[in-house]
Image (cartoon, rainbow over all chains, first blue to last red; front, side, top):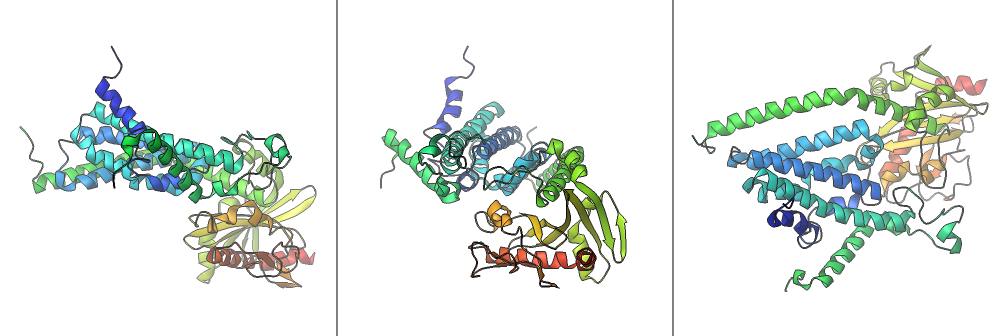
Amino acid sequence: MALLTKKDAKLISDPLADNNPITIQVLGICSALAITAELKASIVMAIAVMFVLGVGNVVISLMRNIIPSKIRIIVQLIVVATLVIVVDQVLKAFAYELSKTLSVFVGLIITNCIIMGRFEAFALGNGPWRSFLDGIGNALGYGVILVIVGFFRELLGSGTLLGFKVLGDPIAKTGLYSIGYENNGFMIIPPAALIVVGVIIWVQRSRNKALIEDH
Amino acid sequence: MAINTDKNVYTVVFAAVMVIVVGSLLAFMASGLKSRIQENERFEKQQNILYAMGVNENQDEGSVSFVPTDKVEAEFSKYIKEQIVIEGDDIVKDNEAYLIDMKKQLALYKKGETPKLPLFIGEKDGKKSYIIPMYGKGLWDAIWGFISLDEQMNVQGVYFDHKGETPGLGANIKQRYFMDDFTGESILDGTRYAGISVAKGNNDPLNETKDDNEVDALAGATITGNGVSAMIKESVNLYKDYLQTISAK
């Protein structure tokens, strides 16, 4: 027996590629630009969003029949806000340095349109298990882009990956730096993320022409 | 029996129950994690103070690295020889002085009351440092930091931090290239107290003159820069009398 039925597996795989929240739906761009200067922050942000979206989707799905429709958006907001505070406090207690780097962006998970979008579009109409898969799938789709962007920005901007000097030491001029390579300071600043995301969108659409909209 | 979720009574009851459940959940969690969070904040203060006096793990240019958290308590008691609290003319020793909130003390001072001013006396390689905590306003929110002075009132090092300055502009006050500029500057103009100003358009962008009481400003961060100048001026001003007794020695 397969672990997931074909329909369920699609919930995970779709947002990874052809229905990616960042590159196709163009949601969650704010955080994708802001925190991807380092790979580590990207990974943590992806995990945090995965937690909030996975658990949040399940909670909303379990309550979908008892939530008064008049206040459903407020209820959704309360669920996201609660989960975000949990993430924030846990980071402060166990990963203080990181919580300082992410500071406002953890709070901004609340306003990440991907989350409210999935609650409203999916969890309110589907069972908990499928909602959970949908949440994880969308968070993975978001996370993959974050990690790709973080990878290139940290590598080209600082010459490191997760803090390790993979290209050699820029001060002691070892490795690549000994032949005159320089870090590109532009990659550190947020506009560089826009360019990297743009390149990803370009590559994705040129590989799958069906994704190109008619105008 | 299906519940009619459209009724007003139901909506109100649902909202009330939800708030109670969520509220107690968060309160429970916050009190559970409180001690850990406070410990982290304590370590951070110790790291910042040590950073200002030059005890840090800075290696290459550009990055700011503190003493690691597992060592910070030992290093703090090794380098910080004395913590004192200055209250008017009274000076008392207090090993918890670093936990005093500078924001509250500045507010007391502005109301005309006597503030309790913490000062840390450190010693590294035989040189004494007097480390003063600072607190002020940036463009969006609070900025704070520590400034370490030697007996001649020259800056040995500074550390700045901020709550929400603009990333890439004002937030750069906690970058090495900005903080390092302060090292060697004097807070005195001759014998008069002058502070250090973050100035743009000064004739010394590389900061070679160390006795002009000026460092080069950050482009695009005028208000944050002014905030840093004001913060240094105001905070260090409170310690003027005490500092005079040191430099007079």
